[in-house]
Image 1 (cartoon, rainbow, N blue to C red):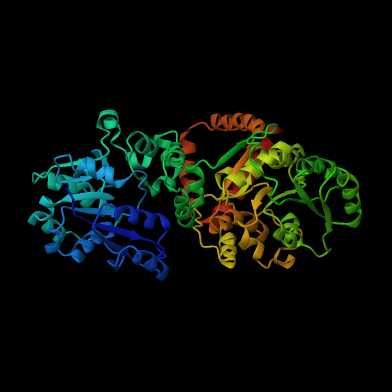
Image 2 (tube, one colour):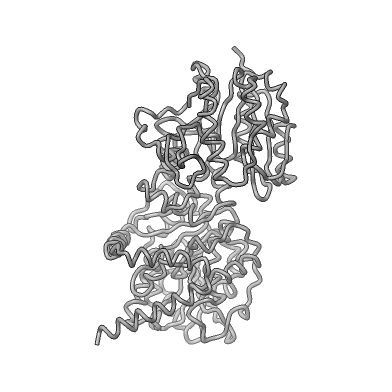
Length: 612
C-alpha cells in the first residue's frame, strides 16, 4: 500500500549555512515522502538556499522565534490545515541530529505494522527536573520531538489543529521543553490517541530513562537498537556531564561504529561540528588522543614515501645541540631539516654535530640581531618561506626553563615534548601514517604538562591570554567559537606536528618580528602566548581537528602521574567552595589571572616558610 507523506524539516544556523549533513538528511527523507517543506529559523545564505532549492521549492524563512515548535507550526500552516488531510502521515523533524544511518523505508515499514496514531524515534522517561516549569518540575514520559510522525486520524482532528492554534509564546528553551516537548505526548494520549516509538528499549533500559539515552548512551542506541540518528549535542556536551553519568566514551564508540558499520559519511559530522562547536568539547567527547608505538610501525602497508616532511628546530644553547640532534635524527630518513639559531658560531657547531647524522637536507638559518619572539618568531617569521614545500612539519626547540628551579623541572619538560614528537624513526613514520589515514587531522602534540609548578596550568589554560587570543583570531579571520569558559587545546610546550594546509591562516598572516614584545618578556599575557594558543583554532577554522599524541611507553608514566594527582586531590568543603569561586572568577579573565598569580605566590611563600 502506497502511503502519502509530507515532511516539515526545521533548520537553524546562526550564519545561515546549510551543511552537507542537512542535504543528506533531506535526500533520504524524499525517499519516503511526497512533499518536503524546509523551515529556516533566522538566516539563510544564498548558497544555502541554492542547495535546498535543488531538493524542494517549499522553503520558508522566518524570524528565529518560538524555537522548533513554532517552526513546525509555520510549516504546517504553509502546507495548509485543509491540505494536511490529503496525507496519510506528517513527519516533523529538525536538524539537531545526524543521520540516517539506516534506511528510513525500513523504519516506516516497521511502524506501519503498529496500531498507532502518532509515533517518534525515541522517548524520554518520566523524570524530575527542578528547573522545569511544569507542576512540581515533573516531566512525564514523552516522545522526543526532534522526530515525530502524525498519522491521518490525528492529523485531521480538530484537537490537533486547536493544539497548534493555541500554542503559547515560547521565549526560552526551558519553556519549549516544559510546555511542548514534555507535554505533547501526554496531551494527545489523554485524548485517546495511541503512540509508540521505533526505538523501544523498555526491557533492557527502562530503569535508565531518567536520563536522555540519546545524549548519554548514543553507542547503545545506534548499535544495539539501530537508532538511525545521533544527536549533535553528543559532540558538544560538556564532558563533566558525560563523566558524571557515564565513563564518557559512548560518543566516541558511536562515532567509530558509524564509521565501520554503516555507509554514512562521517565527514559530514566533522564538517558541521568543526565549524560550529567549541573544540574543547569535540576533543573531549571524541577522545582525540593517539597512542603510537615507539619501536613498531603500526601499518607497514601504508605508503608514506610521497609525503613531503620537514623538521623545523630552534637551537640557542650549545650544550643542548647533541640533545636535540638525537631527536632530529629520528626523522633523518624521511624529512628535511631546517634549524634557526642566534649566531654564526652556533651555526658552525650545529652543522658539525648534526650535519654528520646522514640527513637528507640540512639548512641552518641565523636569526637577525633585531629578531624577537624567541622560538615563535623563529618559526613563523624566519622559517615561513620554507613551509610551502611540505605537507607535514614537526616543530621543536631547545628548552631549559632556567626560571624554574631545580633545573630538572625544565629538563623533563623538554624531554616530555621531544619524546612525544620525535621518539624514534618508527614513531615518526607512525605519526605521518596517522596524518595520511586521517585527512581531517591537522595537528598532533603532547598533552598539557603536569609536573612541577606547571600542574597549576591544568586549572585554567587560558591564564591571562583569552582577550589577546581573541584579538589575534580576529586579525587572522578565524571565526570558530572561542569561549573563556572552555579551556583552549594547544601545545603547552610549544612543540608539535602540523599539516601545513591546516595552519594556512597562520602561515599567510604577515607576521613580523616587531609584532612581538622586546626582551625581557613578561611571564604571561604577551603576543607570543596568544600565538601559541591560536594554532588549534586556526586548524579548526580550516576544517581540521587537533589531537594529543604520546608514545606507548610514555603513557605508562602519564597514567601513574594522573592517578597520583587525582588521589591527592582530597574532596573537602574548602575544595568545593574554592572550585565554585574559581568557576565564577573564570568569567572575568583579567581579574582571574591577577588573583591566580597572587595566590600562587602566597602558596610558594607559605611552602618556603614551612621548609625552614
